[in-house]
Image (cartoon, rainbow, N blue to C red; front, side, top):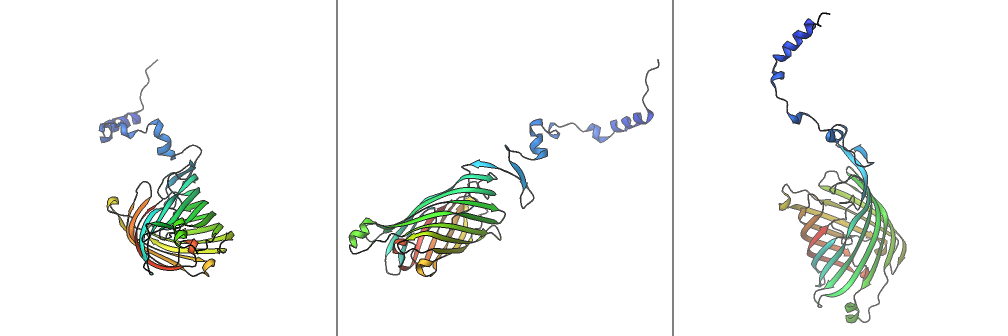
Amino acid sequence: MSPPTLNTAATDDLDDFASSDLAATPINASHFVDASDFEPQVLGPVVGNGSVVGNTNGNREVWDWHLLPDGLLWHSYLADPHEPRMSLMVFRDQRGGEYWDATLGGRMGLLRYGTGEAKRPTGWQWDLEGAVMTRLDRKNSQDVESMDFRFGTEMTAAEGPWAMKVGYFHVSSHVGDEYVERNPTFQRINYVTESWIIGSSYRPVDSMRLYAEFADAFIQSGGAKRYQVQTGYEYTPLAKVARRGAPFAAVHLNLREAVDYEASTTMQVGWAFHGPDSGRRLRFGGQFGDGPTSQYEFFTRREQYVGLGVWLDF
């Protein structure tokens, strides 16, 4: 039997390849995809039983369940003095009174179905919120004048520039013991609301936010009435260098049936530092307020004030 012979055309092809630049190029290990990396590099990331979805920029994002997730889909209104956060403000009103307004509270996510990042996540989330808003009288030994307690829970959602919330919150107002001692004829009221709430916000660009909210108090007492509407605008550009911060501005309107829908207006300007990973914001600035007071124990009181404050937003 004669030995097999190579096809002449195949032999010519091998000779051409051997003399080409490609054959002389060394093989680099980085040209290969490790088996453990094949799925995320070629098929896209998959976490647990999560779904891979496309966002508004055409990127693939993983939606999955997250217990006690980092970050929020819905954030407290910057200029609303009745929102959960950590803050301290000193101000002087039109009557010459000087006060501290201190808020101790926060907002956190319990469960999310969506993306896992802390900053600008997408999906659905169940939130819990709570705060106490306390007013101290600086001219009377820092005595507690009044306190408003707020507690709530909400379902929130965010996709692209839109966000929304639907939920419940409780508000109850209390007067300080020291205030009662100084004003023995004062008659305390039991201002309480139990409300359903719905809200929506829109960001035409990343640095701007427009929002509106409607609350229906199905239980009310102490002069409180059923309906409340809030709306506002926020300007929060991100700093090019995080440690240098950036300016911010916000305006908030609160209209309640209890005060015949007279607008309580709050405006803020200042400087903010934004956590690039956490999404939290630390702000320093000035605040101006005009209209019915934010301390609901004295809800018929009208005040105008200017103050300085620091706010930590979640």
